[in-house]
Length: 447
Image 1 (tube, rainbow, N blue to C red):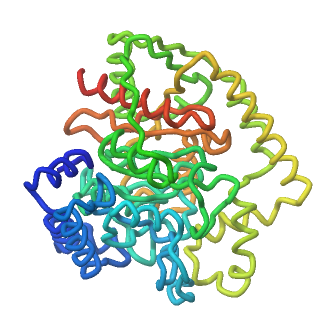
Image 2 (image 1 turned 90 degrees about the horizontal axis):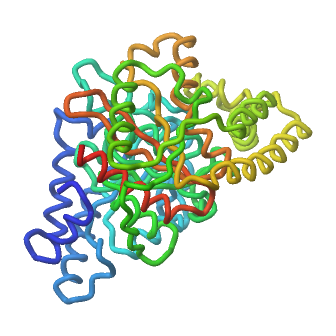
């Protein structure tokens, strides 16, 4: 079963149980021929079985806490689970004091009856779009496993857990694309909400100004359902929109640069399908995107805020970091307080400018990542790593800086390398963006 709704219907009909679903996920995790040992840092086999049995008993008694009670979910390894250290896939924090309470997002998932099956691997401290982890291994993209291709990051394990059927939904975080990038490179759907809607308390920070928490799953409806749970909002009914008449804007300034041939074919085909279905597609420059590039010459918000958190730990334990993660965090040491405040001020102004430019449109539309997943071996040198990481992060990070919401939809044909089509909107347009994304998803499937 690929979707939450399919699984929920099967549970309601009694054609399967939560225990069945959990056992299927645990079998995929334990398969020695699969990616489970690299996807999960910790597996909750016994706890998941007990929770599944409890949810089955509640359902039989007519007391299931929600429509999706009993469905398996994976948790990124920087989210607090009571009684466990939150290591963020580092070795430095592997023996940190255990969390005293669940993060609010975990509390909300448990209250809805979802069943955590384990903690997923990630880029150490969530600071890369690549997904490589030298400590716990690198889970591979489902595409071309014989070659061994990156999953994207930083929510690498979350994406592969869904793509490989180890969970029906994965919970990730997104500071500069960390839900959408691995979704695009693993062929699933990934969502970045308006950050303020979902509490980041109890989640190890990367850059609090940019951090957000979102789901990765197989459909837009799956992500919408879990987003509502994470935000503590009532379950939403996605507005049924036709593709015909949707107003979509494709930026022409730099976000289309550097596309490889497979990704360009997939994106062009997706745009053509939507155009034939009657979408109103406008190709134009966005001044706010150009102004963003100018603002970022001052430095990186993510780096300076990450450095503020990691400064003491780097002073004592830098040799235990992934060297590339440590170097990137250290870039934040170069920015002074005045430069930081100027960048924060510029960001606020650009959020307004972006919202104004987006007023005539239902969504922005662009490639999530301009390239198919490169081989892990392509990152052997630092020069290649920095170049490819920058290219992979380039488009998704725009939305975080503008404090918007965004979703990545798979748009490749069967047998092709994975490619993601990203839709984005200004802050607090989440419900509308889900409606647009559901319409686009149907339009792409219709051909």
